[in-house]
Length: 239
Image 1 (cartoon, rainbow, N blue to C red):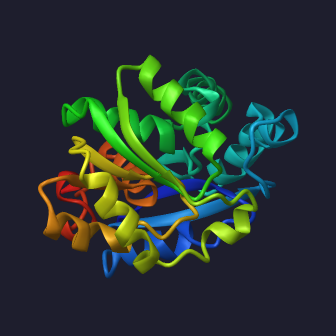
Image 2: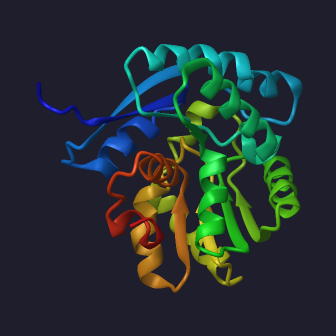
């Protein structure tokens, strides 16, 4: 029997149309890993109980149990809700997933915090499709963990499906403005935002590292399963 590729399971927000095609694009022609998805209902990002309920541990557990039937090697909640709900929220999610499935688990938020620690990142420029109040909550959560948001740009959207309609070119000018504050890294925070294609031109123009949520989550999954990391075009830190 041929040795199978390693398998990454991803829990995907239902209205997300970016992360799956972007993940496949980042992996390119690689055949050493494959990606498999399960969706949970997510349609709106806001600071209220209705939005928060979308990210319950129970919905994550149910999706993870389905992914586990595909014999995946790692499971990621591929959404950034922990950035405003708190990393502890995501740590609880990964504990529930691991207990229910026996599979190692991570999230987009925990992937970012691992990257911050590994690469000694203490300050960031924050670019999101979200509303200003969500950005402010993210900045507070980051600050509590020692990461200073030196400047941010909120596009002002709350309908999750609309986030993927923002083009990479539309991210370039606000990226340049954030870089003027000299953060250790610029982050595109949202797995339904096409930040990954903006990383290479932004890094080529500046000394600031750029980190996209889809790329960072994939990178963290690859580190967990001890697989080769990413091509430099998706972020010079993630290689």
